[in-house]
Every structure is written in C-alpha cells, then in structure tokens.
Amino acid sequence: MAARIGALIATVVLLLLVGTPAEAHGGASVTIHSDGHGSVWITAQWQDGHPITEPTAVTMTASADGAASLAPSVLRQTGDGRGTQTYSGTLDPGAWRVAIDLAAPVNGHCQALIQVASAAATPQPTEVACLIPASVPSAAAAPPASPAGGSLTPLWFTLGGLAVAAAVTAAVLVRRRS
Image (tube, rainbow, N blue to C red; front, side, top):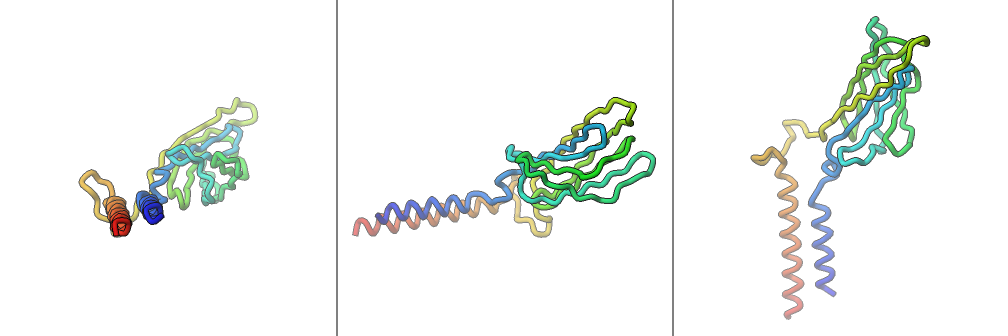
C-alpha cells in the first residue's frame, strides 16, 4: 500500500512541475476576416490548434485612406468554439487599415489592410493571419536562459520533482524491508 501511495505522490509531483500553464499552448494564431461589405471579425487559436475561448479583451482600431478613423472598439466574443470575436458595426466603403490588440492571456497585435466595396462594386473578402509568440516576461524579470535560449526554470522544477519522487520511493522501499 505504501508503495502505491509513494508512486502516486511521485506522479502528481512530476505532473505539477513539468510544465507551466503559459507553456501549455505556446503562442497564438489570430486571423482578421472581412466579408468585403464592411463586417470585420477575428478567429483566434493557440498554436497547438485549440481555439482561444478564454475571456480575452480584444480592441479594434481602424483608419481609412481619406483620414477617417474609428474610435477604438471592443470586439464581442461569440462563444462559437472557434475563438471568434466580432466588431458590432460596419466599415464604410474604402481602404481601411485595421489593427487588433489582444489582452491577456494572448497579449498580441495584428493588423490588416481591408478593402470595403461600394454598393455597385463586387466585394472582396479578406483574411490576414498573424502569429503571436508566447508571452515572455520582461527582461528585468526573466530567469536565466540556457545556452539554447530556453528557460532553465522548468528544468530545475523537473529535477526537483524527480529528486522528491526518488526520495519518496527510497523511503517506501526502506520501510518495506524493515
């Protein structure tokens, strides 16, 4: 019985210490979409393919060639399971530079040039994808890096977890022999 408890404790320790939540998904992929009629929305997923469904504040700004601009607007999550967020208004005909800023947990920026057709023209849908790297702590707070550029912190946690697991296993074996 003690051996099973020791193995269970060692397994739990290793699972808790091997990776951190921020490393679980990696960076993100955000795509700005437009139907060419003035509607704008984004889809967002983690680089591991999971949609970003966590509450994420997304702000959109847009400016047209003719100096027209929109006040920053917060996009609305649709809850569709694809990580879709939509702009509640529509852009007027013309060429627009749309910028998207995502807050935590993504912390990134994406922009696209979008052409909105006039009523007489044929609309051209737009999709522009941006890759957003995983969030990195500031340089002042960053842990020392290994020669390959990765963080040493997960390695030390893993080694510490292995040491705890070995100690528990050794204690269980000593008790069984006594």
